[in-house]
Image (cartoon, rainbow, N blue to C red; front, side, top):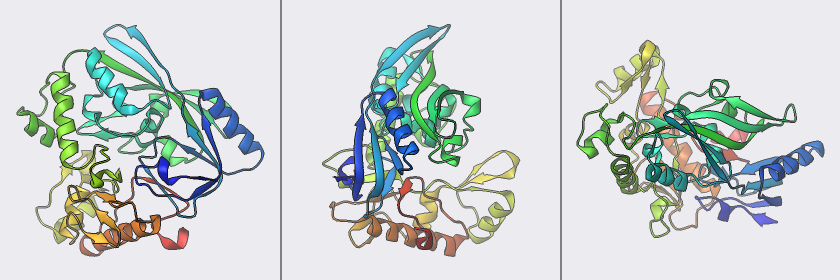
Length: 348
């Protein structure tokens, strides 16, 4: 049995009962379809950068996606880039910046594979992949057909998608992005990034300059994979920034007047989870056994020495979640996919 820990950035996870590396989209479909017909449980694994696998592992088939290929065509003032799900994300962003394709530059330094990007609607520093995705090719395990879903069919929202809301139904095979042909970034939408660049929000900068600024920010937070940096032994941000309905926002304001926030349409408010965590008494470097909050960023939970278990990490996550809920009445939601485990112990 293949141990899954080496295939995850957290270095956590027990063995898979059966493990297959699929080199093509066709093999991915074949392996998943055959397992479905046999009634076998299936876990499709990409880069392992957004997943926590239980210490008991996975009692079924793990399909490691390893398909490769990038095709490029021109459509007016845009390039259309179709990428196989097994391609690594960061080299794609580097190529886009180098080629003068605008729209992905603020997503530099994010680990993982292309196939994961539409599932999470991956985003950072004011950009989300939903802003550039034109189409997602996927295997629909319910209908047993390969489908091409236009962006409007993907149900994208903040760190969410139709794929995430129906976990396990679709296996992403390829993603098509439409990128502007331009040496300039998309308008800088994130205040912290604008400050690092020395520009006002809404301004545009050379692609390479935007990319380097994003990489600098991510490195400062331990969010660029580096074997020499124990803070990068994580799954990135463990909790999403809560989006509160108007009445929930009023409740939080009563508990923490003047708290940081982003106003959203309809009176909703997005609140920085990192601020909530720190104010609830969990600073950078806070540990519970061998699991630790990153020393650089409170949103990342880490396995710094490689000695933590998934149970250790989840115990820390529960402590943080419960502490924030007790102090602020806000329940944080995990961003990584939990395989064979859960934050609520009763449902694990």
